[in-house]
Amino acid sequence: MEAGEVAADDDVTADDRWVPLVGFPDREDSMLVGTVSFPLASFLTADEALRLVESTDRLIGWATAVKLRALARVEEAIGEDSPRRQAGQPVRFGGGEAHALAVTEVSAACAVSEGTAARSLNDAADCAASQWAVLEALEDGGISAAHARIILEQARSLPAGQAGTFSRLALRRTRTRQGRRRTPAELRACLRRLRESLHPESLAARKEAARRERGVWMSPEPDGMCTLTALLDAEVGTAIFNGIDCDARQAGAKAAGPSAGPEPCTLSELRAEALARRLLGGTDESDAGAFSAEVIVTIPVGLVLDGSADGAEAPLAELEGYGPLDASTARRLAALAPTWHRLFTDCTTGHALGVGRGAYRPPKALRRYLKCRDGTCRFPGCTRPASGCEPDHTIEWQDGGTTDAGNLAMLCRRHHALKSIGAWTYRQSSPAGDLEWLSPLGRDYSTGPADFGKATDPHKADEPPPF
Image (cartoon, rainbow, N blue to C red; front, side, top):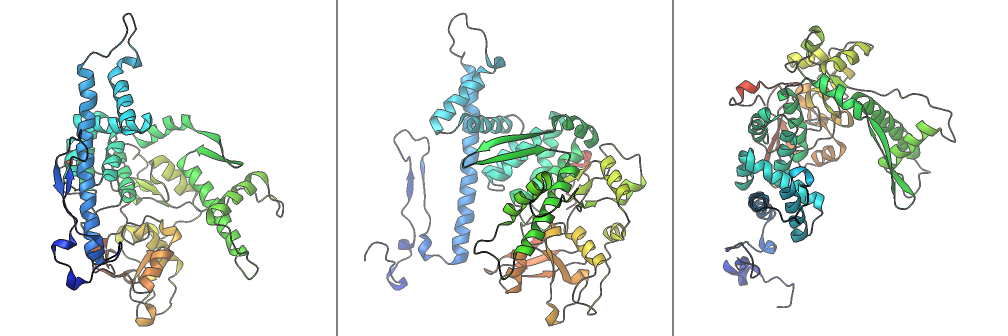
């Protein structure tokens, strides 16, 4: 049989389907001892191959935990020995000579930058000092290295007294109420809300301090390009981006047509052009003036009615495309809104206005409700904001489906297409909007509605999470 040729199934024994044991050590000075075996991918079904992917992910998590334990010991062991310095030399690095030496050793041995080495050592130090639960979850395969890194980053931004409570709650939030493991992007958004609810200092006070860091920076890039970066108030930056995005989409719609070029501009390119036109003026249009951009804020009713709720216990408003928003800013945006919509009442009661079989397209009030209820595309793991998604009839209109909240869900174009062709299917399992998905390989996944503004009582850390 020539190289690359796969034998017929009849000629292959069960043992032939497995790669021979891969043994450690892989070199003479290796500190790993043992063997591992796995089946040849060419003999696996799609579901079996996916199970192998899951198994290797758990192995990577275990190896990452072992690495973090070893990294923590590197710095500890270096610190146990007096750093080598010439006689009379002053103490340097603010007394952190052991850390500086560990960074250089890890950087040289692992062929990574010193910045990467420092971040790894910081994660390892956190795990060794107070984040044992995160390390054990990583070692047991309950979370991935990406999940662990997000938890450590968010915990590090809290005072020491809240970091432990945060991590215990964060580990439980790596899975949704339905048991599906969150993607890193989903987890980051969820933990930002948790962090805000646990932080002892109010969001308004922290925002006021952070505003002193506002600025705009430019850095040169190759090929005649540059990167322009701005640190702005969340509501200001969101309005600017939404305005640029609106301009870009309108320009893209105009450009799409019979006379469109062979390589139409991407949405990112169109946004860059829109920003330049807004700031510098266009050649074919007069000054467009200020943006008339839509900024969507989900505001708990109690936050508007109770003007005194400015502290850490205040319910959290949510700025679409960003995350938690402080109470005073949320109330100011609410006051600037030209009208009040039934959206507030609908989100509180869970009831929505439907039109049954009276119309295919949902009315504006129902679309507004769906955007609030769903928050993002409802496909498992997708975090595209609902404002950029389309309402999908769970039971197709042509099959007798109705235009009601219980038969509609927001899907981005990509996942809407996958559902429309029948590759992925779902059903609504509760009036609240819980969806149960079925993948082409027969795997079950669940997604729940958005969870905006729910605070967590740090004194009830051992109670089951509310979502």
